[in-house]
Amino acid sequence: MTSIRQLTINDTEKFVDLVRARPQTYMGYTDDQFQETIVKNIPGWVSEPLNFSVGVFKEAELIGAMVAVESPHSPSWTWAYWVATAGTVGVGFNELSAEREESLTALREADKFLFDEMEKKRGLTRFFVAYYDKPGSNNLRSARSSGRFLTFMQKFKLSAVRYHIVTDAVVPAGTEPKYSYQRAIIGGRVWPIDLSIKMCVLIN
Image 1: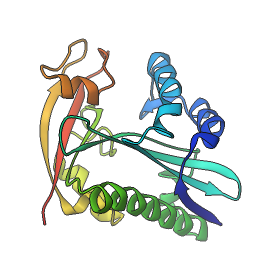
Image 2 (image 1 turned 90 degrees about the vertical axis):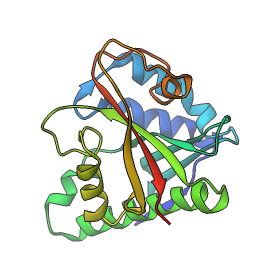
Image 3 (image 1 turned 120 degrees about the vertical axis):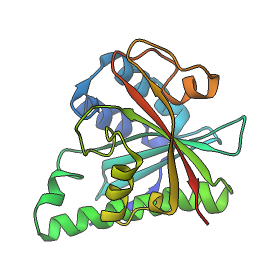
Image 4 (image 1 turned 60 degrees about the vertical axis):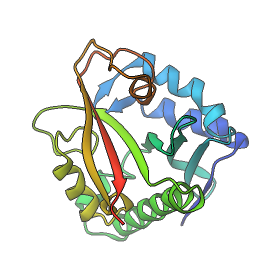
């Protein structure tokens, strides 16, 4: 049985263990530098007021997490990070089973919990997400087009389907985006892979 709640400073160790167990940051692309940055950010993600972290638990085990970071400069937030144990998301969706339905239910509940906080409680109707801009992939984090992104959201009935999604910037490998808010969205570093930054605005 799964449960959803906001993560606190007391969950730091569990969050770190989950990240350490899942080193791939962008669908198979492993980057030790970014993983260490994630681990360093976790205490702030679970304690600072502008941040909001959602945990998915199975019994007492943390099996998934989503992180939202509110901008201090504009009424927007960044979907900064998400991670799950192997098979919790993705693999489990390929089979018709009770476990698949439980995985889908947990994903939808965590998604709703996150968006209720950022959209309804904080009044933020615009968010950003960045991912590996990998040609020919249908994966959520590497899809080139907002159409594929929306297809994923529609398929699993997630909150972002209510948003209009546009490309805010494409960041070629080895370069930095022009604006400071974009640099913050991609973790304040230069990546060896192409990245795409999407801006998502609530339709109504």
